[in-house]
Image (cartoon, rainbow, N blue to C red; front, side, top):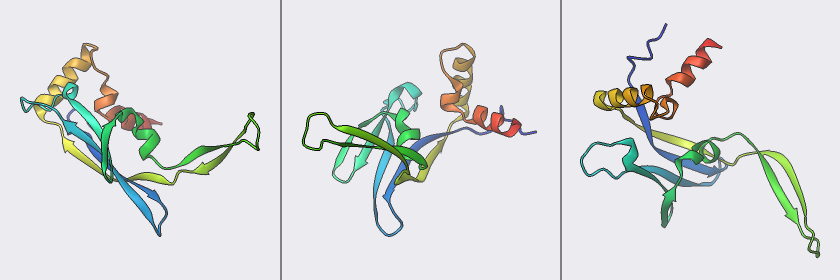
Length: 141
């Protein structure tokens, strides 16, 4: 059995997303910015940004599953047919965008100890920092 407790932890720090097909498309980036002034890389001292050609804007990393994982989605259309009461239709389709390349950084031993300590006292959710819980449950099922 694999020892998740002593395994090295990594944190996601960037995603290059591709939208389009195999013949053409567009690339965008999601970047975890380090806003630390003391060199600590603390989880409370960071923001994410979305970069799209000429624009860079703040971005909520909770959107990663929605905006960076391919797969099925419901596409919604609304038609107005000349009146005020438009009709809305939804149909299943495949997302035309997906994470193309992921960037990680290794979590230092000191950071891992701090994360473990804060997880045990209930101030942090371990699943946010460590995918080992997800991996364990998938291996056991």
